[in-house]
Image (cartoon, rainbow, N blue to C red; front, side):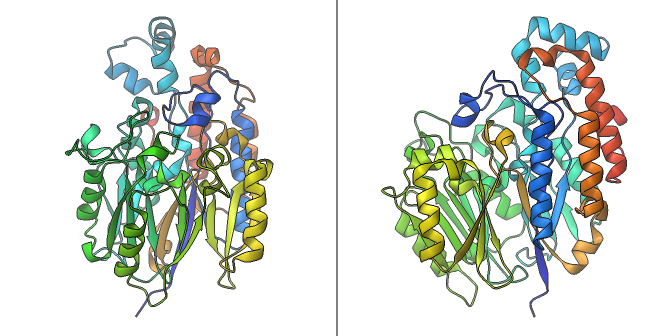
Length: 448
């Protein structure tokens, strides 16, 4: 019998060092915003407002805290010595681009935090987590151990939860987490279909791959996740991204497709061998319903419009009446072609009945929309009760976090500000208080 289960959106809090450094090659928005001044306070409050809006609509909403930045631990591992202040001053002078990298607040995009598999799909009937190694970008490759510690603090009960280390670092097993993964099901507690999308075959250079921008997820990495999580291969589908779209700025699958329940909303140029992918999804789907496909044509929304608006980096959510809602960034409204398409979508398609627009510009300018900001985690009632309850959003927690952000965050950061040792002091003070608010214990290196 199917167990009652919930899909919970765990959003990443924008960190105190949120800045625009253009670190993500292949991410057009990130590159376009390089060297602009950011507003961490506004970014964190925008993210909280989106979380609260979903909570008020009846969706379960969780919170994942930011990582400690600047990452002094990594700088010490690279040979810098002295007090924390001396290290920051020295790195700012001798290796300023390194300081920028270890100060990135990129952990806010928790779609890249990990890949999770619910107990309904895992043959040992446990919830599995594997932090993404994010090996394609240095500033993200240093995240996984701290991310793993946070996940263990959130989901500590080993009766229900299993935590794995990230896959081996390096190009062959590049893993970018849930940004390249979708799960389809009739109900969240049912056995689902695990859909893994990758950019290249790492061990076969003769296969198609992008030429301009890197393919961050490999076939081999996706396969490894299925083995670690004890997934039934009969309910797993592997699809390759269209290399041409990667070269146009589609660095993750969630920039060109989004799925929920038994629905896949995607651009016609998202996948290589599209029809074969659709056929395999239909053949392997274990549900009693049929998979539903909403294909957006190039003539209606071009790939470049999809990338600039992040139409597909929206959240697709199931409403109580069985229809779905699309949570879009405000850029979808200002893009003429995308706005026209969305107006027609809700009139013509019964699957997606409503579109809501939210302002997450601080995240968008660095290359992450509403879907980048959240990690979807499916839990049964017992598993939900076994997790850290203090990280589930409530009206009281929302107000507490608003006050916390306004107390600790700066409203302007440019690249030069990262050389200020006081920023590290401010960030640590904020995170130390946050761990107490969320009852996480000592999860940061500076607390140990």
